[in-house]
Length: 318
Image 1 (cartoon, rainbow, N blue to C red):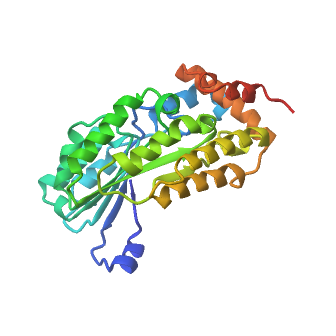
Image 2 (image 1 turned 180 degrees about the horizontal axis):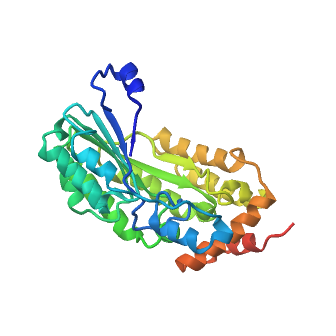
């Protein structure tokens, strides 16, 4: 739970109620996925892995989530008729009973009609959570999709891409004529997806720019991975980066006649992430090897099955 300071709200929004108008609500790290680039604070499954291998990931804090914050929200000490925005992150909000309870609280007390809701979800399911959305003033939901197919399933175990895609298209169809809904898609570009870019990127671009018939931003939100240490592009030697650059240029050529300039800008940004975002560091490659092999052991995955270059990278020495 992270409310904005009242002082800042007074200045920005003219709020004299001494209560936050904008609430960033993150009840705990409950999640149903163990994503490669995730952190213990955002996934209890990753937290479990980190604690199992402290010699690899270092000592992690104990995430203790008590009921006090939840009680404050449900007793009108935080959310009330003057709340204008509620941002919900996780973990995975759609499977968290605490989040369900808060959204029902907003609806039952007639607060939801005044609240803009912001959610980030992995779209692993379309459960009763989505029934609450119709009651809010407006809703912006971000889907986390870092690849497609086998690469997606490797990164976001135990999710299945076919089901995720079905859920995304079903959601878009359900709300395509609802102007209160906005949909966005986040893609974290990372070494674990780099060598298969040519396989998954065209499908993801077509999904966002062509198949998702719903009110959405013009551009897919492609982000460069910034942590955990060793899992960023600083671990990728120049000879391996060249392969990724060549593949990206091939994908760009594939979409050279596409009507969306934003689509091509996505690819240009990815080229910059590979070439200019971070310098290669052999020490980071060594950390990449250790962490990747450990994550594979814990998750029962094998990065070398995605592309032969991963085996070569894991064996690379200077």
